[in-house]
Length: 306
Image: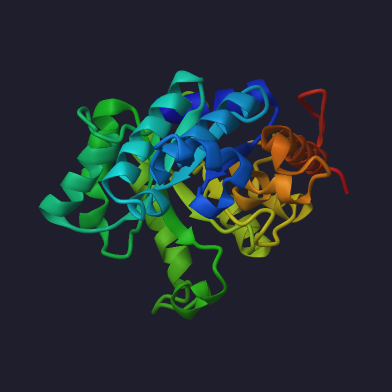
């Protein structure tokens, strides 16, 4: 099961971090893109070359990559090819892959989305894909079926990181639970029969790193659910605040960072001439920040600091 592989790759690296490839054309250093464009490359080709350079440069530090599909759809057919090539390259280099597509529909359409990303003949084969549950169980069942056939997984939106998430997700339903707590309980139920050897289900949850109190409560509520935690870095979430989203062994979650790594060269003394080196420095800083917050020393968990 891919969830077991994710847990083990995080343990091997001693780093619960995901590289977010939310790659916009303007994030690519001009000195890198200009020669490629002059030689006839299209924008999507430049984005892939940038992604490939980062993937190669960070593979000894980061175990997981999360690719935001919207930025590739934005580039048209070439962008969709770039998405597939980026997935292939990440998998070739040994990363666990998450496609952040937030798909949500019902019936045959949900089945088509599931088949595209996590099915046996997936055109954009990913270890995991993000899914929007707000159409109900009908929109989740096709993904669970395909994940059961392939060993792949999903991350279901539960409490998202955006500032206005509470407009709907924090509403109280008739039994006193918030809507996101109701969704959390459904996620646990959907994943009951898909728990791997490492104790976590193939049905994971997206929990915004920007809501650490709610995240810690969800961790207690969902002991067998692996968390994808977006919002670290550019959105303001800190490693110390995220500690409660992890289990008592410092596991059970992966923290995504996108712009803070992709654009690290903009704050680095060497500038865009060494964008991979700047990304490595930021990735190592993030790793050490997370290790300190979770109590890792030399890759061994000793208990949370503070």
